[in-house]
Image (cartoon, rainbow, N blue to C red; front, side):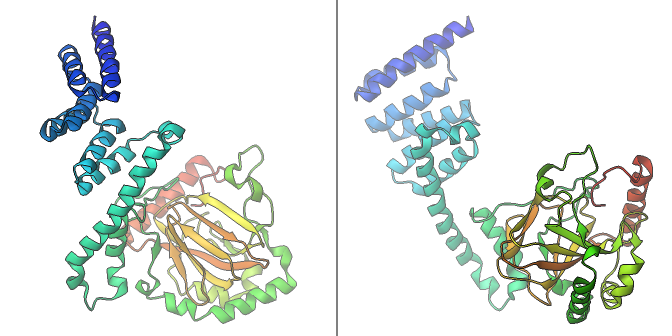
Length: 397
């Protein structure tokens, strides 16, 4: 019975739409009111009724009809786009933008790839972009006096907030693969000046680079492919780099074990990383290595194992056209400046130059962890290794 009523309402909507197309607004209104007597929450009937009232000049009834259409299908893009177009017709561009924006949110992937909707989607996207620009200017004017005399560093997070609110950037979250620690902020790149040890490490750049050059000249065999998938396992997005020297590593510490021969050749490098608070986890950390990326090589986007630690890069050989992307933030390496980031935020790197790129990589604890939490996480990782076995792939813990 319910389906029969729905079919009757649908048929009345089709006839009403034909009348709307011909400009017969009163006839369409009569048909749609009949449809709503049969199915009171018929979203399409409310939306068409809104069109009919708008065309006949009854703004109040048109607004009420569009609101009822949205209430009937709150997660559908159609009624929201209908109301956006209506609001633009009556000159309320700011109100229209709200419904363009929320309509875009509810579009499915199939809708977005539908050629028949492309023009409407472009109209919505352009309206939102124009509004976002105006909104950012308006919001900034409200706070500008509070920002006078403040440093760029102190305002960085707030500017990022405004960028997200006004569509210039996305809200980025961390996705740890093995040991997720809740309550830690998802910071893409940390400010190196917040780490008391950072400048001491940066000041060792020339000594570390000299040892790297000595290694490269005499011990290239020490560099091994960074990606080495066990036989039978899926290398996933790293297939092109699996057991390939496009991305290679020269380990000083590997899986918590000191590579004595390599460290003996790099005493200044080992001294430099000891200036930073090293993570110690049985059979897992420290991990310290020179990371080399061959020309025209990409490291695909991926997520690290735990946000309990941060990854640190000391740039050593940095040609042009190389970069590291964490979330939506792209940075180029600069000599004598550490890059410190949360690798559980989706990140990627590339070397699109004709030369090799090399950085020294090591890890430190996330500074938002207490000493107790550090000890608990370290013991937990050791427990996972004991439970699953050291040979099982637990990610880069």
